[in-house]
Amino acid sequence: MPQASYWASRVSKRFCRTSKIFGLSSVVSGSGHHCRLFSAMKEIKVKGGSNADPHLLNDEAHAPQLSCATQGCSASNVQCTPEIEKKYVHRVYDAIAPHFSSTRFAKWPKVASFLSSLPRGSLILDAGCGNGKYLGFNLNCFFIGCDISPQLIKICNERGHEVLVADAVNLPYRTGFGDAAISIAVLHHLSTENRRKKAIEELLRVVKKGGLVLITVWAVEQEDKSLLTKWMPLSEKYVEEWVGPGSPRVRSPSSLALESIPEMNENNSGTCLKDSKVNFTGSMPENIPLPSQSGNDFANCNDENLWKTQQEYFVPWHLPYHRAEVSGTSAGALASGLAKKDDKKAAVVYNRYYHVFSEGELERLVSGMDNAVVVDRFYDKSNWCIVLEKTM
Image 1 (tube, rainbow, N blue to C red):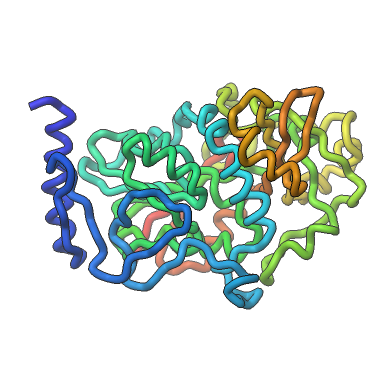
Image 2: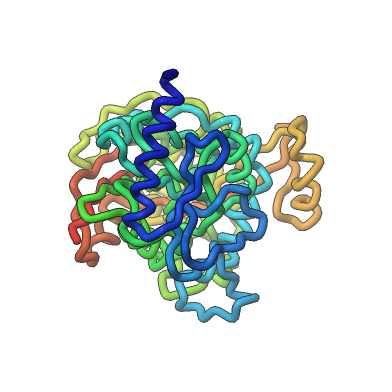
């Protein structure tokens, strides 16, 4: 039997058994090698979602996204999506999805090592899977994924992955269904502390007792401090964009201008950064330079504490004029002001919202959760990372 068919058969048998454990009905589709799992409860209808069937759905009617404006949500409801996320995360990634996907192919060694270490037959959720570059990485395991961007989910679906559109703070999966979950470069796009904490709680909820969760986020302590001169610290005028008591701190003057950079020079881009000399017990590498003394006023500030405490940024993404997307979604984005042209770089520039994490911030978010322990923490390629184990 060919290897692909062998493993597909193994997966089919395993998940047909799993469906009984979780009280789901199973249906064999296609060639019979894949056992698709359907919730016995209410299906979720996702606007703009993929054609993939929901997997192991929660018996509550989870919606992928709640709009505070249209659903009448209170500001304290962490499942309401703030306008800044809808505008500068969701809409942007939908607009740049094909180009973004073309730069996302290299696997981070630490993520690859985590996935490779999981036992054979593990069921793994990639929450915020993007273009699905980690889905199927370990051929001995079974992967499912979700992302808030329908356009990225469309790319995953075209690649044959089992995916659906879902919100990180409101995952539509049943409690305790998975053996492990990963959240790679996702939480820094959530604009309030309460929403970031809720996303972690959701990752823990969907794995079983003893299950592992790997989370990575961009760090305040960037190895290349010159990047900070290319990002725009958020100003007072954006305060009204947030909802909820966990609103970000605002520190920079509203007059600061955006200095754009090509995506290949950006942290976490398709171009691999050189491995840094870091202490994987969690401490920062020594002798990281201060922001360069050129560029915007923020970079010229001599107050080291200022750039260490500034955590809210717009990070630009350059979509080249020659990309097909420019004639589609980007035309509307330019007309509405969501994007702007940079003729010098021959690109349409979008701003993406980021909350960059300080050392220990991830651990503090978890500290009040009684169902998890931190089993590993480390700094890797300008990211803070933790591994959690669900204890109950």
